Structure formats: structure tokens, C-alpha cells
Image (cartoon, one colour):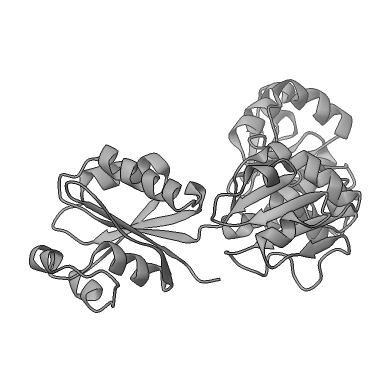
Length: 351
């Protein structure tokens, strides 16, 4: 966790908190100043605990509480929003016998943190989420460590229920890392080599891992994951606007039925100064830009080289060459031209 706070309100709790601080050095310890022993590793507070816990809840990625589970629930419950934004909350009893994953077990990382803390303290981890208890696939976590994005999370709860109740689940994958589950899938999960085979199967729910647009008739009972598998090569002029680039990009994505959330990065030729329009679009879409020198691009074989581009840029290809060079894969969209001065090509990063 990037930012974790430990809140202890008893003498035993403070002792355990100091032990945790030794094991997790970046974590901050908070305790009431009435117990202060002058230890500078502890942030001694004068506020009420009910005030302090709200402050820590709102300002940390994870909160470890060394007092009663019931008290923690009562204090934080008015401030809960949703599992996407609430921090992980872990509760440890006053004797450090049990470490309880209390809030944001999956997306917030509380379950993993609970196991880490319990291992360090020699305590018993308490985790109650069904996917973990049944040692099956946590639908909301598939590919999270690899940067995959869920296209639409409205079906996550439903498909999660199918998963833990051992209903038939079908999986189709055409991009992204294949080691997202390990050696052995749960018995109720079947991988299908084609999307049509998945569509014609008797699967009650589906996990679809793809950078392509999925037919509407499959979406009702599916969760679609978008690995960062597409590299967008951009050839452009110094004054090409953000709007022009975005319109061209969306035209390509729609025409070739590709998912926008699978764009890993924009790539282009290194110019004397960055093109403002591309920088603005990258910022708006939270997508990284990678640049290549003209000599690097000139060495890449492309299907649609241009003498005009060679004259002005010193390489016969920008968009195609940059996409191939960065992805180390093959083009899925050859150069598309958009007047007056934009070209876009898209390559897929190999699995």
C-alpha cells in the first residue's frame, strides 16, 4: 500500500503498532497523547479517536485499527462510499491473535494485506470473501496486477456469484498475459479458443479478455477485461490539434472494432518540440507517449512507406514504424490517413 496508517488506542495496541512499524517501516502510527512515552515513531494525537479515524480513513490507502471490530465499524460506517474508492481497513485484536480483513478486501487490497500482517505477527488471518474462502477466481481482480481494466463493472457482482456457486463459467482470451490464473483453473471454468465457441457454449457467465469490441448478445452475462495490448502510432504535423487526433483515433477504433481501454501508449517520431495536440490528448486519456528518433524508425520495414514522409521526416514511415517498433508485434490497423496531416496505425503487443 502506498500510504498506510496504524491506529492504536490501548497500551497493548500501541505495543503491537510499534512492532508493525518495525516490520513495515513506511507505515505511520497514531495513538492518543494520553499514552505518550515520548517515542517519536508514534504520532501522538490530542483529538478524539472518532475524529482521528475519519481523518485517517479519508487520507490513506489502508487503515490498520488495533481495537474492537464493532467500534471500527460504527466509526467508519457514515463515511463509506464504494469499494472502488474506500481504503482497505484491517482490524487487529488487542492481543494480536487475529487479523481481520474488514473493508475493501479485493479492490482495496485488504485481503492481501491481512495475510501479510498475519504472517509477520504470527497471527490468524480472518478473510470472509467467498472467492478467497473457496479458492476460486476473484472476478473483480482478474488481471489487476497486469494493468487490465474492466470495460463495464455492472456485471461483476452477478458473475462473481456464478463463480463462487460453481456455475459454468466460460473464458475467452485473445491478448494479454496468459498466466493470470496459474496452473489449474477451477473445475467450473472452461477456456474456449474462439469467441464463437464461447458464444455457443452452455456457460452461465463469461470472462472475456480482449482488446476487441464484444457483441452485445454476449455482454449481458459477461465481464470484459481490457489488457493494455494496443500501441497507437501517430504521424502528425507540429500544429495538429487534439480534436483532430482524437477524431482520427476514435474513427480507427470504431472501424476496426477495438476497445479504447486497451490502448497502452501513443508512439510517434521525436521532433524538436512535442506536439501540443498529442500531449493534450494523452493527458486527457491518461495514456503515456513514447517517442523514437527518425533513425530508429527508418530501419523498420512497413507495408505502406511514403516518399513524402521520407522527405519531411527522414524516415519513410512514422505511424506504422513507431507502432511496430514499440509493440514488437504486428499491425492490426495499417496506416489510416486523416486530412490534412494525420496518420494512425495500431499494433498489438504479443502475448
